[in-house]
Length: 176
Image (cartoon, rainbow, N blue to C red):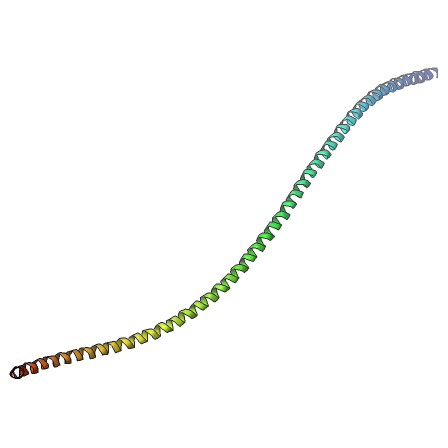
């Protein structure tokens, strides 16, 4: 039993020794693990600080971009308003010009209708004058024929008169 007791004591002593070594080893590993964790935590904190700074920079850039975009949008809105006002003025001007052109066309149509009436009246007068000229031309032609006929007759009378005068000439000389 002594032997068993000694074996047990040795086993216990070895076990305690191994446990102590294990504790020391675990303690060392824990210290190393803690240091690694602290280093990693420090690195993580630095990364978080860097990330936070990047986020703040991104936020500032984004806000600046949004301000710039809002300014551009405001400028575009102003341009659109000005363009719309210009278009409305232009449309109003075009509408006024169209209205004026329609009135001018209406007036021109009235003038054209008057001119047509005048032309028709002149055409009727011309037709009447042409008819009168035709009538006068016929009358003139008839008069010309009559004058020719009278001329021929007069020539004939003159010729006959000369014959008669020639026949009477010896008589006239004997009475003289």
